[in-house]
Length: 180
Image (tube, rainbow, N blue to C red):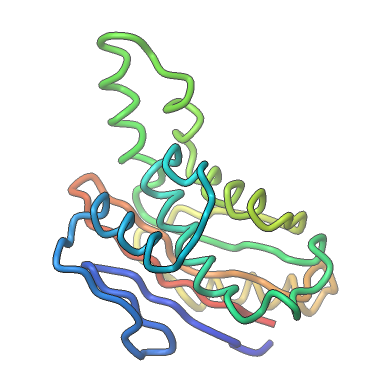
């Protein structure tokens, strides 16, 4: 298994392979995420309807896959292995607030963390394995071992793997890697 690229998004900054790519004075994800989206020149209207966790994963995957468009294998051979510690509690709280007036099906759909995987797969047409683990702390070795098994078994030729967190306080961290 080979690490092809890594992206880390946290605290208003984006680093690719450890090098700064983008920063924004506003650290809150809503403002930062929209600025990063515009900076990347993405045109995908559904982005604005996604939960913050899905937007974070979407942005990280867009950065990871940039420059790999022509080398991405069969979409059925691309897998995602993600984890976090708070599941979808951030989205759950927002949905819970909507119940007070009128429950929103558009918010309800994001009350599972694996929806972030679904959004990335829909955008890119990926049809490989997808799993979202809930862990107390980022266990990179565990995540990468799972990705390695998918690749070595022939189920995948490419895997997006790592940590995708949006906690109740609005702190966020995407630490995703592209593995082959």
